[in-house]
Amino acid sequence: MDDSLTLLSVFVTLLAGLTAGKAWERYKLREGRWIDRRKARESPHYILGLNFLVSNQLDLAIEELTTAAAIDADALEIHLILGNLYREKGQVNRAIKMHQQLLQRPKLTKLEQAYVLLCLGLDFRRGGFVDRALEAFTEVLRFDGNNQYALLNLQKLYEEQHQWAEAHAIRERLAALTEDQQQPMHQAILAYLETQIGLDAMSRDEADAAVSRFESAIALDEAALPAYLNLGDLERQRGRIAEAIDLWERVIEIAPERAYLVFDRIDAATRQQGDDRRFPALCRRLIQTNPQDWRARLAIGRHLTDHAQPAEALTHLFDSLVHNPHALSIHQAVWQALAEIQFDAERVQRYMELTREAVFYLDPHICIRCRYRSTELLWQCPQCHEWNTFVEERMTPAEDRENAPR
Ligand SMILES: [Zn+2]
Image 1 (spheres, rainbow, N blue to C red):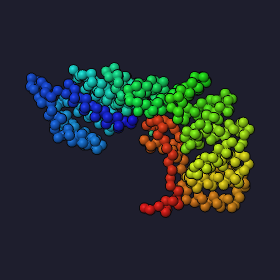
Image 2: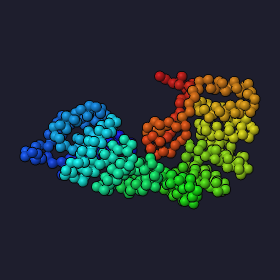
Image 3: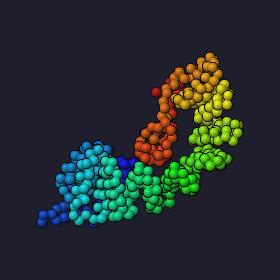
Image 4: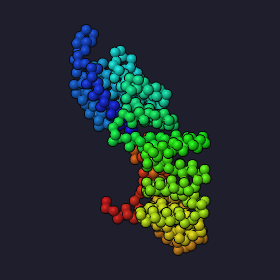
């Protein structure tokens, strides 16, 4: 869940929670007079403000809600929302100040305190004050132990600090709060976190601990690809080549579209076993199943170049280029194969025809949530910290685009 979504959910929950509970009393005695507390909420400024909020026009929302807040200085929710709007506009200090002032109000209910602290935690997180954010979200949980927004934010903060075990513990609490149909999603995230804990163990040379983490990741989510990759790497390090290859081949069974993640691994491991046929056979099977698979074509091309068959390699590499003319890795493999055959004029000519329209680019993976770009497939986005949001971005080949209707 990203920040803006969280924000909107907080608003909705906030409005429902505060208006339904005793917290919002319709009449209130102030300075010896009963005042009608509905006034601020029934004012057109309030309604307009919320409308601007929904349409993401923050400046206008701030303007109207500030006017509404002036009608009733006690209206907690309006001040809370105003603070959030300042945070969204990047005025974090102002947001913190507003929310801290709200926290000092006497007679806040537990629910109200939890909401204000939650908003303050979001301010701190946005401002990069990690410790204070952790403190605020933890405090929210003291008032409201099942507060999902606080839990979610805590998990993300721990992840940002690479405190995977803490993040894991929080995700387990979140999983315990939600319904059965959402469990696979929780388990997939827990599996990623288990894998990270395993990687930490691996970097400390605690191989047994790492193995058990990777295995429990797979037990949580059978499709936990990074767990298979790392477990295979560990097996290979321990000299158990056949076991490593089996694990990597399971990656291909589970997610053939990501088979390329194990190409270099399987190629090297089978070579270590003295088997030069298994890998090209694997690539041929993949190409047969999916003729679009330019990575399998590239992999077999590289393999054949390494095994002194550059002419056959070029056939595969040119086919690969047809399916993805923009991948620099294919061009590099082509240059290497061409060099092996002393730049045979006919093949160089063919290559030039194929590439005339190509545009080079280096970062074909993109986060579908925040558009962060990366040269390699990342399991967690470094920008928005979501799991498994990367897809391969493909440009349409130039010749197709010319023919396409405009
Ligand atoms: Zn992202």
